[in-house]
Image 1 (tube, rainbow, N blue to C red):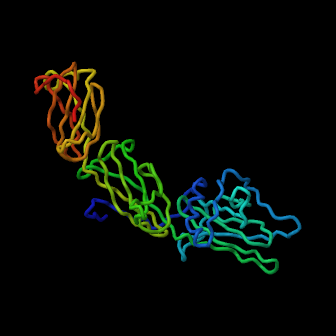
Image 2 (spheres, rainbow, N blue to C red):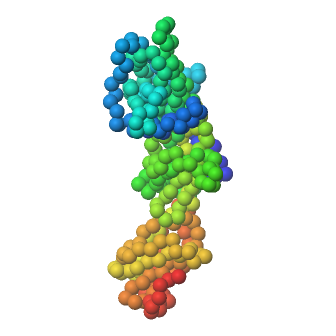
Image 3 (tube, rainbow, N blue to C red):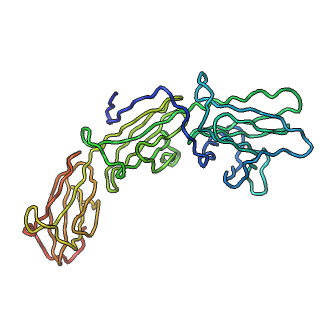
Length: 324
């Protein structure tokens, strides 16, 4: 394992195949459709029957399809979603779905004519134009996806495991658009789940908790390989309590505000215990109870979860205005 300067640990798997596809993602794989010269809206897949069809009076031809992750790889046996579309948009402006199949290789009975064929492997996929001739043998159609994937996880501090329920990931394109924003590829990815993508570089954002603990990294997806990437957070879980003495019982009906060292409010809540994930740094805890304000400065250290007691004997004042 290697560790980069942004604390991302990466392991590359030797093979990446036989992973189940998600047919609901098939429309996302039309990212190359514009290269075919088209701008037609694609249909929602669940709105069409999966039964192949052919125009009346024309003899349907058998066309076999297979897909590989790399040029020198083997044909995939599972995890693919195949869709065949007619070339002429319907009244709704969408291309009609004529046939579909899920699994590995696929065989379609297609009448002579033009089609668009899409194969999706999770978020990876491509679309190509197919012409079925009226005469002659139709060769097997081999599609090279040039795809791989990754599994994401994160730690905090040097190597403190983060509970999966407190983590989420978002995957963005590596390049910014004209508006300066990155294109979102997939949101709310759970830790340890497989994300299948076309080969390339992606920008991954990890959120630990819901306040301000965020880690980012650029991760390379290699065709035919599965990358395991672990991002490193600099954060910890903090629980605030208003108490009459150190280690005492938390006082109920307390309103909390947490401010950064520069005075920005990062979290507010009302409870006896205020628990949150905060990035490493200096903070000020402000507690309101029975028209009195109590406060305490504290420091968050990466990977060191802690309880922070705010004492009733600490500086108090009448709460007659909102905290700025």
